[in-house]
Image (cartoon, rainbow, N blue to C red; front, side):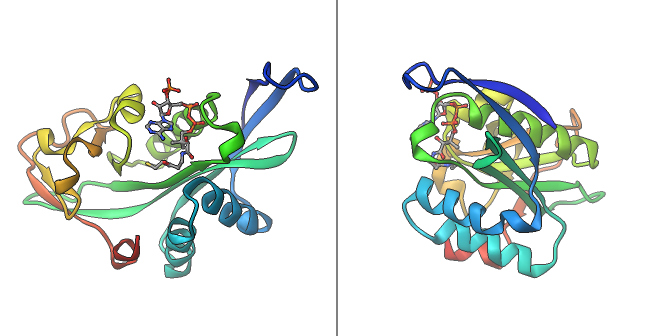
Length: 186
Ligand SMILES: CC(C)(COP(=O)(O)OP(=O)(O)OC[C@H]1O[C@@H](n2cnc3c(N)ncnc32)[C@H](O)[C@@H]1OP(=O)(O)O)[C@@H](O)C(=O)NCCC(=O)NCCS
């Protein structure tokens, strides 16, 4: 478990609150839905999480807790790159969310750092994401198009990003990232 402190200096009551990142537990599923619904102001992303969980595919799902209360969530699920050559172990980062009241205080950064560490530990070679380029570039993500990758999200331009956890694995491996059917509803 990763621990850090959340600077709540704009809150006169709270001083520093510990933030812990840990794997999602079965009893967290309602909190995961709430966090995503509040962060995205809708139910599409929590629906995606639920649908992928129901598919039975192995996922990485981490929770950020403040004082034991879940306040953030990050989710990775398997995805295929259609490409000539050996299979590239790839995960899609989607979604991730921090409750609105605690955004932009570093919790998302902790979640991504812990998530990528766990992805690497489990042998993942590439992570893809569609999201804020300025945020994800902090962790080494770059435009997927520059790595020869295309997907149904290619029209999102630089927001469709990829990160090689195994350096060089995408060299000369142009391919199409096949998002599973569950993503079509988002
Ligand atoms: C994106 C999100 C998960 C980041 O978590 P966080 O705890 O706020 O992130 P951190 O505090 O570690 O980092 C903040 C950075 O996130 C990025 N960011 C956060 N919200 C953003 C937004 N609405 N638009 C663009 N970038 C944003 C910025 O780079 C920001 O840096 P800045 O504060 O210096 O501008 C969180 O803001 C969130 O839940 N947003 C709503 C849902 C969402 O957009 N999820 C991501 C989909 S890819």
